[in-house]
Structure formats: C-alpha cells, structure tokens
Amino acid sequence: MKECKKCGVVMPLEGYHIDRAAKDGHRNECKVCFNERTRNSKYLSRYGITSAEADKLKKQPCAICGAVRNLHIDHNHTTGAVRGVLCSSCNRGIGYLGDNPYRLQKAKEYLEKEGHYG
Figure 1 (cartoon, rainbow, N blue to C red):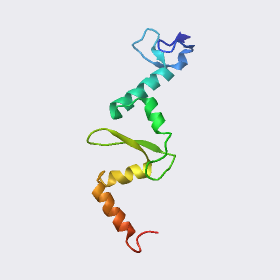
Figure 2: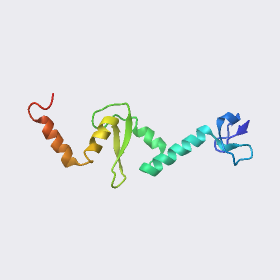
Figure 3: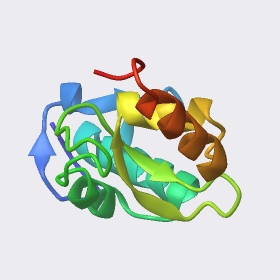
Figure 4: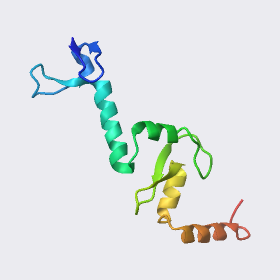
C-alpha cells in the first residue's frame, strides 16, 4: 500500500506506475493523478488550455456539421489560437484545404454547380 503524494489516496502498488529510480519501485503519484497531469500538460502545450477546458469544449457539437462524436480541438496553425471543436471529417476537410477560406469558398461553389451536389 502507498499514499499518493498528490491526491492523498492510499492504494495498492498496482495503482502506481513503475519507477525504477524510486526506493519502492513506483512513482509517488497514483496512475490517475499522473495521467491527468500528463493530459493537462498535453493540452497546455498544444493549445494553451487545460484539460478541463478541453473537456468543456468537447461537450459542444462540431461547429460545421453538428456531429457529437470524434471531436477534436481546432486551432489556428499560425497563431495557435483555439477556434472551436470539429469532428474528424470536418477537421480533415478544412485541413486538406490548407485552412484557406478562399479554397473552401471555391470548393463550395464547385459543389453547388448543377449536377455536382445532391
């Protein structure tokens, strides 16, 4: 049994990741705390937001099609600013068009020509 230095919960060693450098062979924080810290670090470094903020964003539907599954944080690749949430398909679609509004407009016009859509 070991007490997590972050949350204070006492649990069996199976609840801790292995750390060969530690005296007991396990990290000082439990797997739950370690994983949340790692996840939070990922969102902070990529998007400048916490994992809690990312979770809140992901409760919204896709900003383009309204899908509620397979959501991703969408951001401006130049500035890094978060724009919103997109489903996988919409995220890939605007990515393939280089995040370029002009190309997106041209694609829209192309699809709206008689016989190209519907």
